[in-house]
Length: 111
Image 1 (cartoon, rainbow, N blue to C red):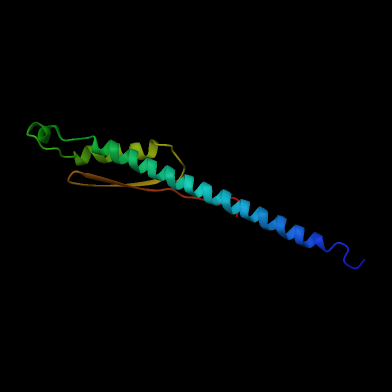
Image 2 (tube, one colour):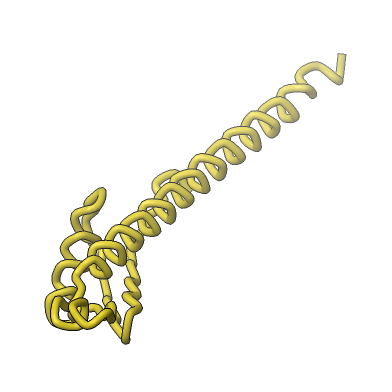
């Protein structure tokens, strides 16, 4: 009769470990979702900025991004794509390339 109740600590330990693993899995999935949203926002900003081409260069057969007009369009598109609080956008335009960097904070709620 001295072994009575010896399974209870093992079951409690396994239950606590299972809950911890579920919490880690949920936080990792939320982090991946946040990362994916930031990538979508960067893509939307880059596409919108690259769509603003110089009409004078286009007439002579060149495709060049209009730098001053493309920057605010790219920022607005990146901020407007699935908007989240605290998102920061940086746009770099050089030649025909529009590079959009999006920083989006992630706060772990479960762990």
